[in-house]
Length: 478
Image (cartoon, rainbow, N blue to C red; front, side, top):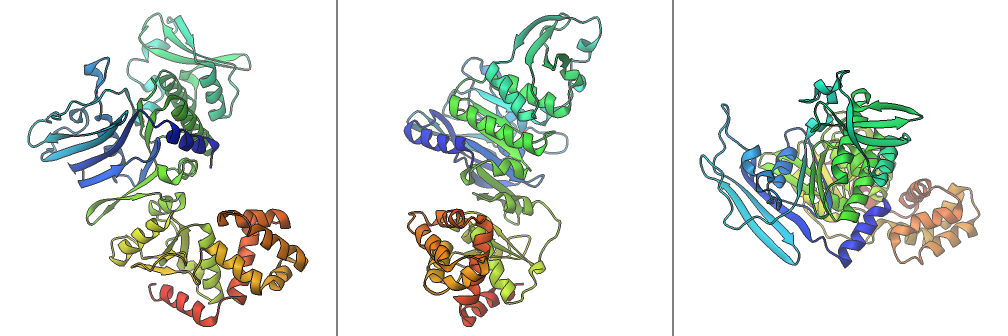
């Protein structure tokens, strides 16, 4: 996990964000029927299929605050959710929970018929920055900019991009820009054009690629964002290659921490999700009962839900990758066709339990089963791994007392070296660190060591009846 994530977590404990949109509730809008969506981290990524409600969430969030400097600059639901020739918005509500200092406020916009009604409580003040997908339009396709490109236009003034932001801009795109400035034309002084210099050659946004262009505009806007603002970005990955997407998230994490802003963004990208902690990921899905909201999802789970390639007969939702390996090795030993099953980590136990319950009630679009760690209580729609302890503790303990020699043979290492590495790793307080510690002592990759240990554990430490019981619960669901 990126170090900025831990710094943000630490900073929030000592100095909570003075302004924070905690949640919003939507009813009567585009399929929402009263669901509350929570924001549990200063950067929150909303992921889901097209039409799942991501943009609706961002537009509703934009309406949460009043603008302290200019009341006309504030957004309201009427800017986004209005009647047209084809649809009428009625009986709609948007509710907000916001934190201002030590106080939590709640208020609601309502549209019972023709007009949106203001909340009875005044909205708190906060700067809101809204960036929709139009930000990725090339400059020459943006309204009002075509005339600036004419040859009789000249640069009237310019302002250099802040040095720190210029450095991040170079980092995000993976190109070294010597200078970055925002220029104004003598013909249209209200319009700003970005100009960069690279290896002695200058070129403007008119000759940039879409990713360069969109990122430069975003950097210019974010450079001037006041502290504690709310920033909303739709389709953040648009026009950016994977490395640039990751680096953009790193920049936003830094900006979030240094200015104590809040960022809510929508995405379809696993690269974006992988750079954010579980508490920053929210998955939206359309179901028979309206919009379903899942928190803390893994990138693999989120992206598999919006892709229709290589669908197995049964999805197995586990808590982490370690449980995936154990589950796979058990099924492999019992000769289950692994092409028919896909195991994937989806997050903490409560996420596995929630998905298991949905699957058992046929509320997911695929057949699925939750696979809980052995130390969790039984739950509907779930099976538990063999044993009674978390996977690392169970495997390490069982191998230490009954299968060290078998593991040493598989690893082609001296028995004493393997025994010492296992024993030393088990002295660590957090069992999640055991695999990496033992792997380092044995000069193996962590993934190879855990896979080998799981294979030995299944073969040497689990009885036939235990394996048969676990496997039958899975195959009977297929």
